[in-house]
Amino acid sequence: MRRENQSSMSKFLLLGLPIRPEQQGVFFALFLGMYLTTVLGNLLIVLLIRLDSRLHTPMYFFLSHLAFTDVSFSSVTVPKMLMNMQTQDLSISYPGCVSQMYFYILFGCVDNLLLAVMAYDRYVAICHPLYYTTIMKEDLCALLVAGSWILSCGSALLHTLLLTQVSFCADNIIPHFFCSLPILLRLSCSNTSLNKLVIVTAGAAVVIFPLTGILVSYGRIGASILKVPSTKGICKALSTCGSHLSVVSLFYGTIMALYFSSSSSNSNDKDMIASLMYTVVTPMLNPFIYSLRNRDMKSALEIFFRNNILFTK
Image 1 (tube, rainbow, N blue to C red):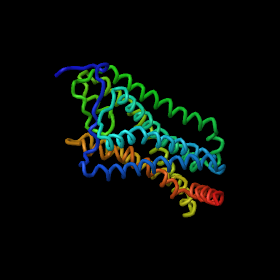
Image 2 (spheres, rainbow, N blue to C red):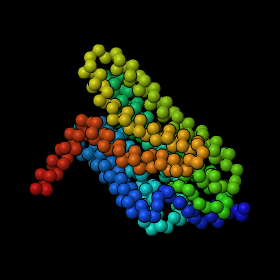
Image 3 (cartoon, rainbow, N blue to C red):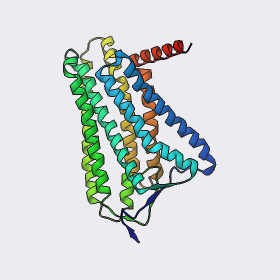
Image 4 (cartoon, rainbow, N blue to C red):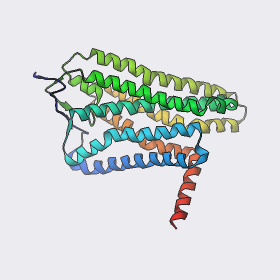
């Protein structure tokens, strides 16, 4: 098979979702609505946290960054997917493909690390409430968020630099709706053992370690809750971390589905469905989870709409 290196490979073809031509319009409207809901819902959370002084706490500081990351994460893949569905132009340039892969890894890692940071915040709030303000200072919160971004940038940059060193075959068809790193490596004609090794090691740093931290935090939270003698105390403790626990379950549930679908045979369709859950559905549901399960967010939302309605009148 003829070989082309990364400099001569001008574009890839994204096959997109396996949708029949007569169903393109319905699915385009569906995914457009989901994307707009994701953007508006998460940006509304960021706005509420910024405007309401009662939400100027570490928990909501982390939540605002998570909401911004969710918007960015969906924006990496969904607009291109929608454009391809509408125009039937499946091509994406080599630089565009590499850039999409970089930002996909970046925002996915930030999302993952922020969930771990938020779990630590809930652990301190429940297990060490008297020392919460002393431990979760503004400087520490900023450092945790900055560390999440720096580690994620480093991981995404490492994968991207290694990818630019491999050569690609004449086959430039990507059976997916975005430029997935594993699929790009399968299209390569080079030895990708180093790339795969980095995927495993970097995956441990940005997936396994944060997940371990989340499990340890909630293990200690659970042990602390069991020591609370009153049912009211247990309900109060659960209410402070219920939203985050729901988001964590949804986030890692889709990751596990993606992993198991990728490890099975004939997994392209399952892989795309899991990826849709991971990149479209989960970021869209997060604002609803935090708004419906969180008393402070519901109160801030009611005040925001009430003030704006009165102002318009």
